[in-house]
Image (cartoon, rainbow, N blue to C red; front, side):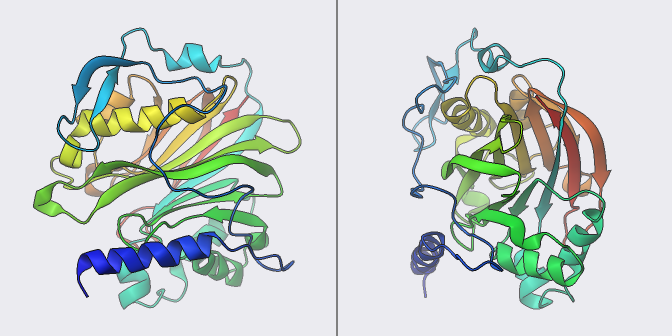
Length: 322
């Protein structure tokens, strides 16, 4: 089958999976509240902080073209960050290298799940972001087999497809209620190393006990790594991500943006994001392409957990949010 046919079949299968809900007491609930519509960014949701674009554009001539933010667009001011963060939020980002770890190595004896289980024994993860992940439930099942006691307490979103849309989120539903969610196209690989469109998966959550809110995002960036930004370039990729944040975050929210950006710490993609978000942590593999960015949150702990059979490191950050 041609790549376009495979992509189409993968998208149909992914959407069918996302459209189903598992109601059994011992099963992970796959879809959050509401209707899932994987669409592009068109306008801010009511009450969002917004994204003020100037007339100057980047990525010109391509679908990912976008206006640069105006010089007076200030995310900190618009989010109205509150003082004295208190609530601990434990997060994970992990590129699973699915094709090899689960394809060729058949899960490698559950090594990725074991890493997650061992690193969550004392304190469970609130939020997990996976890239190159074709089946979150498989990963959580491996973690449960390795002793993770709350593996069935998560809700999950994604993947959109088993290729460049293999981004997925998991959040602890017993602590966090999903308010809004989606998977949005923000970039595309360059022709020199093309696999497809690149996405950011996101969910706006409310803490069930305190009422604290946050926007949690997971991005897998465009190729190639040696020239980050893909088809539309690093500026467009960064601004597309910022627009997704601006269109869905609301005043008082913390923002946590995680993932494998396919862009290292010295790249233009990272430097553009760092003008509006704080860099919280980065990995070491491939020059440091795995990142945590935040706004209206503080870092309490950082941990490099090793690879667990993947070619990327699993990284964990404990944030304090307001």
